[in-house]
Image 1 (spheres, helix red, strand yellow):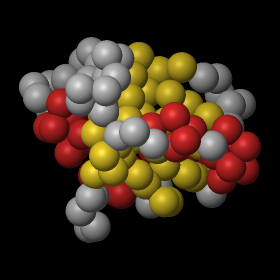
Image 2 (spheres, helix red, strand yellow):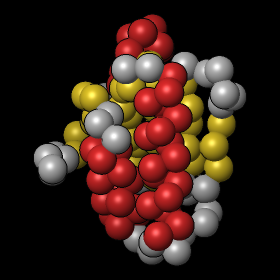
Image 3 (cartoon, helix red, strand yellow):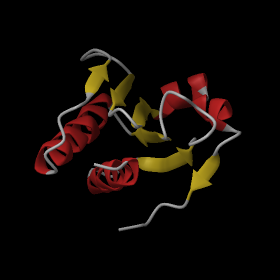
Image 4 (cartoon, helix red, strand yellow):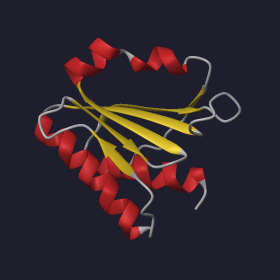
Length: 115
């Protein structure tokens, strides 16, 4: 599966669970860790977990099982490592605090389709 296909099912799953202010960065040729970095916000911890669960379900539907989740049940930030795509899901407050977008300033922001 290509990194673009992983990005596509990931961003659709985020949209389906109403992730907010979703951004994706194309880091091919810049980062050796991943091709794309995605960041989104959730209004609550419950929504944060629903978004991650939706991405995992989409991965399974697409017969993709190479992923890892970092964070705990009480976390305000979960990281989902899908190999060539890394997804960060934050509560709004945690996203403002960590401001990860500054790490990807050298990357090209990907235009995401709105559903």
